[in-house]
Length: 108
Image (cartoon, rainbow, N blue to C red; front, side, top):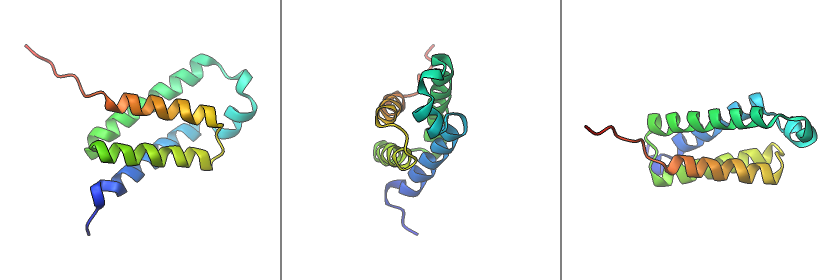
């Protein structure tokens, strides 16, 4: 069946990333106990999420449109789970910036 720009892969990647984030930083924890969260814990979990996103991007061979669909789907899924808007904006912005980086090629 025809897949427009790999949107099914993009949505699958977004769902996997959301599942990873909610596993370690559930919405209630971020929303209600924000002041008790360790900055190091949050940073570590978000960096792990970004690394996972890079691996999935490469595995699913997402191009520009695929990454755009994925980031948009990721954002909406986080909002549906009632993460705070400022948290969603920060995580999505970092994700987009991280996915724009290309893998560095080793040169001799």
